[in-house]
Image 1 (cartoon, rainbow, N blue to C red):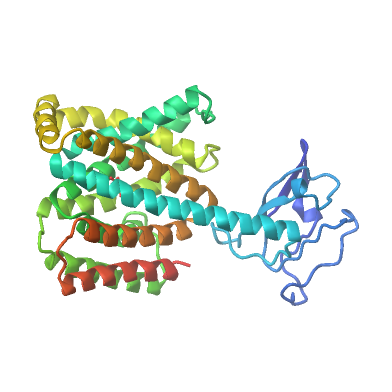
Image 2 (cartoon, rainbow, N blue to C red):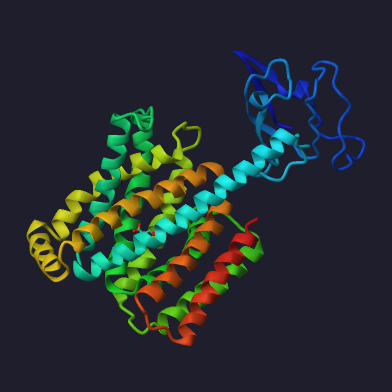
Length: 396
Ligand code: 3PG
């Protein structure tokens, strides 16, 4: 068992509480070890079957079950990196905390999906009127960066405490985020929003292939099998797409690949760093903005933008400016909420949430933009999304 507690500056090793590497007698589920003399727990009952890692302990002094004294604990099996269900007997206060946490996560998910749907709709409206995806991608990062800089300066949000190492480790994440963002926006400027997201539901396939062939990771057979419906479904949806466009297709594929690398670099770079999800995404936006701006100028440039802007405003009136503002603000908000929920949930729950998000985006975009869909095309999309769900299950 790996556990360590901290009381003031003096560390107390968790092995003083319970240390059972291999128990000679079989451990019954939910059985409690006898109270240990060293700690004399008063109202503190810890029953466990699995090895526990205690993440942090607040006021680990008199060991009373006051709410403020509750142990913030996450249970990890020795060979897993994400929390598993522990057999910790919950006190009433803890059960309430758990319920409140579930409500909070539910709210994050609902917000994340809702904000994402709104972003996708305004983004497409803007791209239909103003087909300059490099500028619109830049604007969404710029508005997000501005929102966060103002929040830090006015102390609405606490500014993160970062150092050179932090920004260095963030750099590859920002490069991947920038490529993934521009590529998805280019894709949406060429094809239906629903099609981009159907192809983007194939992201797990990229994740497994990159991890297998570049990082040498292996997965259980069901994970590989779940890739068949993902790849087959995406392929079926692509060949039956009425408005297929190669740039649109490739944009979504590149975005998938870039986001897989973003996740890999992000995992490596963030180990042991104490920056909240909200601030992490804010820093990512700022760095991505710095990376993207010169490329956006080189690829499209102010002359094209000025002419395109004039046309868009003359055709759509001042509404167009609101659409641009909405797509930029909602882009930042949905990403911020998604990073905030990553703080609270495992990467696996996150990926299931992301799949559900794609379903809401695909369905609402088809309804709002009246996208023509053939039955066989819808079948391909459904198979791909189902495959992504099976993948999430197989990875558990
Ligand atoms: C973007 O513009 O970055 C994409 O729309 C992102 O898509 P995702 O967050 O749904 O993967």
